[in-house]
Length: 92
Image (cartoon, rainbow, N blue to C red; front, side, top):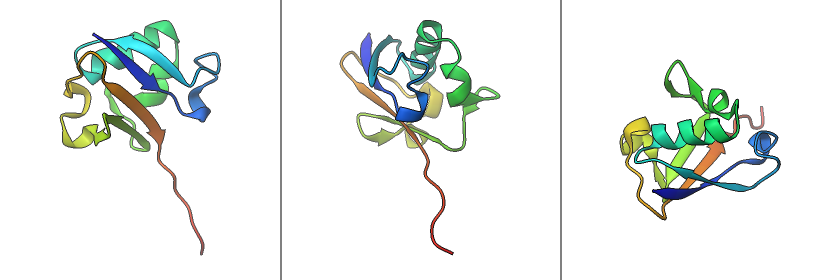
């Protein structure tokens, strides 16, 4: 199954500045493994000790994967996966 994966600016150095890449898999873990195979090193920026990094948010069709199975979240042909780094900070 092919899905479009939106890549945030901070990770585009891994994807030759591509905003979106195609990946295949039946769940998020397989999608991440596929894009890491295509763009070595990007997987390490998304995962830590086999789990999504704390400050990386991932959405499948606008649904936060943490609420729909995390790495086991299913993906279907034509879905959109969006990777967003969490933003922290603010006024003191």
